[in-house]
Length: 178
Length: 342
Image (cartoon, rainbow over all chains, first blue to last red; front, side, top):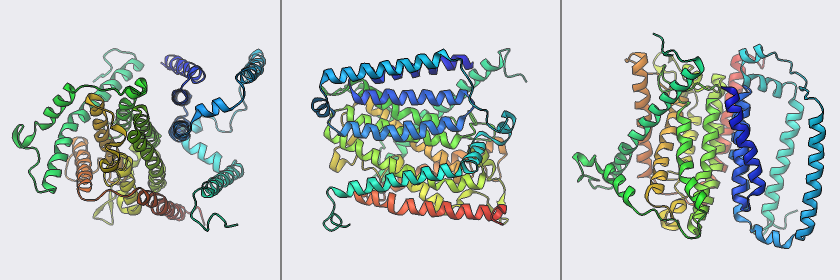
C-alpha cells in the first residue's frame, strides 16, 4: 500500500510545485503551495512520523499560508509588477538562478544518496514511547538552548510587528513615544 | 469470526475503513436536517412564535422542503468571479468537518481510526476551515464577501490560539494526543460521586474551549463574518442554490464535529453510568453531543452579536492570558504530582 500512496503524494507535490510557478494568478499559486504542503504531510505519515505530519499541516498549510493569502488578496500586486525591475532584467535573473539551481541539483544527484546520521533512539524505543514523546524529549532536552533562542527570535519578530503597526494610524501620543 | 472475508490484511483494512467512514458521514448527513429543524423550532419558541409547523407533523418535513427549494434554485456565478475557486470554497467548507469526525471515538469499539495525534488532526482541519471562508469571500468578487472573508480569517486565527492553549491542560493530564487515550483517562469517579471528567479538573479550560468553539464555527454571538446588518451575508453573499447549501451544511457539520471534540476532551466521551459499555457508550456520547448542540442554539438566540473590537479584545486580552495561566498552573500541578520538581 505504501508505494501507491507515495506515488500519489509525489505526483501531488511535483505537479503542485510546478503549478505554483506556472500560475499567473498569485492566489491560485498560493493554493497550489498549500497542496504541496499537504502532500509533504502525507510523506511524513508514510515515514511513520504522524506528529510532524500534523504539525506540517497546522503550521504551514493552516497558519503561514493563510497569512500569505491574506497579504496577496489585500495588496495590489500588479502595481509592484509594473513598478519593479524591467521585464528583460527579471527574465535574465530568472535564467541565471535557474542555471545555478540546476547545477546544484546535478551535483547532488551525482553523489550517491547517503542517509543522515542516525538518531540516538532505535525504532523500537520510538515505537514504545511514542513519536510525539520522543520528539518532545529531544526538543526540550538536548536541543533546549536552540529551542529557547528560536523562541526569543520569534518574540523579537512579534515586538517588531507591534512597533511597525503602531507607527501608522496610532492614536496621538503613542506615535511620539521613544 | 473472521471479518476479513479472505481479503489480504491491507485490503480488508481499506474496505473496513471506507465502510466505517461512509456510515459516519451518512449518519451526520442524516442528523443535519434534524438540527436545522431544531434550530428553527428553538428560534421560534425563543421569539414567542411556533416556528415551522405546516409541513408534516410539528413541521418535521420543513428541512426536506428547504432542500427541494435549494436544489431547484438557479445556481448563479457572478461575472467577475474566479470560477474554480468559487466552486472549490463550498467543498472546502464541508470536508474538514468530516475528516475530524474520523478520529473521534464515538464508543469503546467505534472509532474509524485511532490516530495517535488525533487532537492535532482536529487542529489541522479546523485551521484549514479558514480557507473555505476566505476563498468564498474573495472568489465571488464582492466587497461584502471580501470583508466577511477577512473578518472570519482574523477571527478564526485569533481564537484558534486560545482553543489550542485551552486543551493543553487536558493533554498534560493525559500525557497523550490520542483521543481514545484521552477518553480512557476519564474513567472512574472523583471524590466518590463526581464522574472523573476533565471538565472538573479544567473548568477554565472548558469555558475557554466553549467560547473559542462558538467563534471557530462562526456562530452567534461571534457571527461577524456574515453579520447580516452590515455585510448583507458576508462571505456567502454571492452563493446560491446547492453551493449555498454546502456552506449551510458545513456550518452544522462543523458544529457537530467540534461538539464531539469538546465531549471527548472535557465531558468524558463515551463514559456514563447505568448503560452497558459497548452500546450504552454510543448513546451517552450522542446524548452529550446533543446537549452541546442545544447549547449552541440557545446561545445563538440569546446573546447579541459582539462588535469587532470587542471580539478581538475578548480573544487576545482575556482568553489568551487566561488559557496561558491555566496551562502554566496545570503544568506546575502535574509536575508536583509526578515529583519532577522535588
